[in-house]
Image (cartoon, rainbow over all chains, first blue to last red; front, side, top):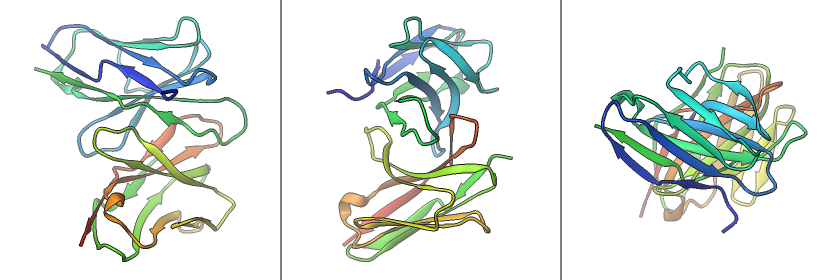
Length: 115
Length: 111
């Protein structure tokens, strides 16, 4: 399967714990995006990388959130001191660069539940 | 401002046409997209339209764009039970790489 993969698919944690999610994009894609989707809503943009550079961050990405893409391939999203409001589906997408149109291919998501 | 709105639910009979509507507010939108989300699966791009186009047809899918009214629609001809899913309208804005999504329209197809 050469699509976007995410790990884990599900994560249950207690409030106050730290969690880390991983995203592996399609291999030739140099752009990588993180979105968050809460129940009954569409995905909301969190941040985006071009290669290893983090080029844009949403105001939704509080200080407790950090994303990295150290070698320009896979990416991690860490949430520190989780809160119940962090419960959501975290989606990763990747695309090629260049031009106005760049189809973003989405992974299956990591569903986070904070108890 | 950035805002994309959709009706939340649509129910159609199998074989009928479905029309899902979307409105957006940012006149700088460059591309508009329709994504499909099925349970347990990732978002799948169905089709897209460039902002200087009025219509795009792709097999059973027809996208209409009214740029003056900032209104986008997706028509699915001969709707099948396999079309039951949540459909998201999204826009990308010149100079930005993120997608801005609506809340999604749940399409239910019944016999």
